[in-house]
Amino acid sequence: MKQEMSDPVMAFDGNELWTIHYRVFRYKRSSGKPHYDKFNVEIAPHETVLDGLEKIWAFQDRSLTFRHACHHASCGSCGIRVNGVEKLPCIVPIREVTRDGGTVLCEPLRNFPLVSDLVVDLGQFYRRLEEAHFQIIRSSEPIERDEHESSNVHTRFENCIECGLCVSACPVSGTDGLYFGPAALAASWRMIQEPRGVDPLSVRSNADQEHGCWRCHVAFECSEVCPSNVDPAAAIMALRQDLLKRKLLRLFQRGDHDRA
Amino acid sequence: MQSQRGGGGLWLLQALTGLSLIVLLGLHMIAQHFLVEGGLRTYQDVLAYIANPVVFILEVIFLLIVVPHAFLGLRAVLLDLGPSPRTTRILDGVLIVVAAATTIYGIALFIVLQGRV
Amino acid sequence: MTEHEERRVRKTLAWLDMAGRKAGTWAFLLNRLTGLGLLLYLLLHLGVLSLLAMGEMQWDAFIALARSPLFLVLDVVLIFGILYHGLNGIRVALVGMGIGVRWQKGIFWTLMGLGVLLLAITGWLVFTM
Image (cartoon, rainbow over the protein chains, first blue to last red):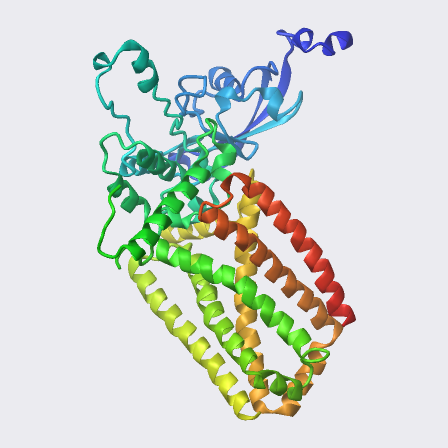
């Protein structure tokens, strides 16, 4: 066993099981006060935090609610806080957050209305993305382009998976319920960069509000937790710079309103 | 005008007053402690200090910049208490009045002291 | 307390929710706390200056008090507040305008290093000058 540990490939023992204490946030509208439940789970260190939650649901408590779908960080529905930090539990192996006999704390995302246990209401979050005109619009049908070109033009990698981790980590979203939040502002910047038929001026004027991009306080927590490297904080800064430049230009070219 | 209010305008004002305060506060501190031999210690020191017209202008500019910065900052903190739009308007009014009163008080004090030089 | 008020209190306390947060939120929290402290100091400072208007005796009596060790310690606390708020403010203003976004972490820690140095120097000056 000791010898095998030196080789990372040999050290992987598919049968090794750890005993992990899950401390899970519980809340049901009908039963009032939120509390934490403890579950002991036998789980392999390479299995994920989400695997553990599913074991709890399957073998210990059918009333535990949590969201999940794809299990590979592309649907963005399972976002929770693991040991306090916003993560997609579907891609976090147990060994990354604890050790054998250790505790894993699972809590719902902050700054969203709580629905049940680990499930929060993302309704307003999605609405704000819509207000940022965030959408994927085909600029033209693939058939009109030759094959070589279309592989470049239509491989549109929209990296935001709309998981809400950034809003949960953002200290401003914590106190200012009207703040648009990192995801919606990053989406605004995305639409300005590549409007696809959307009027960039309306995207700009939507972001250019007191509770819009100006409310950010440069904590960069959103970019710290983003599971798909959207870097919302940098997008907000780019958005501001763009708006400031336009304000300055307008100051010098009075009456001559420049177009996007 | 509409887009200026509450938009980038206030943010930019806070950033620019903040950056200029770094210079002004530095000058304020250096002038207080090094312009008069041994720093401002007695009543007479202060009168001698304020008699300098450059100092007087510097202190007034400092006051004119620090007060808006301080009250805009307070406003940002108070907005986190989630006031309604109506309460926010009242709050803005109160903050403007208090900030103006603070500025007038400060300048009046300078003028009174200058009168004694 | 109504449910609405309770939610408002909870939101305000979110200010202090540090679980899982990194340096950015600490920077934000400390910026606000020092900001509020400096506002309070500004008002006290202006208030105390009215002693000047009252006359020489009142002012010189106050200065004697202000030179006591306790006040000197408070001076260092004040300098800490000014240095932190000012230096972090440089980052918030510049990065907030889109300048140095990619290096913002380095900018922050460099400014904080500078702050520690300046605090040490000014602290030494406060007690020796």
